Length: 503
Image (cartoon, rainbow, N blue to C red):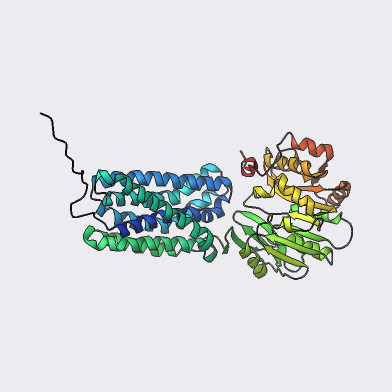
């Protein structure tokens, strides 16, 4: 006798309806998914003071968060199949809130031991602070799906709709954080606020008779929240949208100020003597400037930082004018507040990406262009390519020069590639660095110079020798040999971070 086929749907909930209202369920998935992406973006700012901001940093963060999403989705589904999913939501959200609020403290606890590390340290530091909150947040969606799923016949629509809601939440978290929140307040209070929102979201779930033991959890959460809030300041004096910045007084020079951006000593400024230069690369740039024709210079500066070089040129070449293209508005305000920057007719700051204004600049406008923009140790890749340098060449005067400061370490993959790119655009190129750096024995700053017309490079070497500098000027065939077959950087291929990172 054949077994009759049951035509009724196989149910997973009571006939009375789903265990959670649709609007509330969608809101929970939206908030949890948004929170994961908020944490992912804020992780970059929290980690920057210890491991910098490079492609490897973002790769490590994205990889760890994706691992948390995958783990949380699997564990949340597994747990929802083995216990009442209604008892899981409040603990998942509450624990996520606690872990989120503890993330800054975990970064500060683990970060000093991994400062300046490579890919392994980046992954370990990210995992120590953000893997668990990403995991618990990602467990929310499969738990909610289990609560809303009535029958196998509607599996596709239920799973698909909540997947879409989760993606929309992730998009909202990404756009709101990147475009709004990070420009409105520092990252640490943002993380604390996010954790508080998650805890508050868990409260109505906890007091719907789901779990009587959550009172103790709530008390512990409050204690941990109070402890975490006391650590909201972190290592930054000022947190901008791009950097963790602080200004230190030079104990050997009362008027000296040192600007730190993330993990790097970025600029040195003497508040009373703008002609004083402390960093070696800045002295080399000054040697190049001294060899230009006498008189005022109209200069363009890609990157401001402490605004040391434009103020130096104004002090040593009276009547000079400077246009500084600086992407970080908060850094400009910091320089005005703590580093003595004063804008006026002789020095004007245009806030924005240094590459974008170039096409609108008149041909031959600048007698000097200085490239001194950094994201961590590396020059932003789009400021290194042949296409960018062609635009630089166009806006240079016939007798002008382009001077760019780069940092690299053996085997000097990035420095060689950037010199190859300069040689592809400029007829006359020089590489200036200590001999040990040029021969690949150690890393450091390299000052690269490109000129449209012939340039008396020997005068730069004479200036270096006069101040007892250790730098060597490579030109012509020596600069070509330094390249050693490196590829020209282009907009469609400029792996700057990978070329620079010490191996």
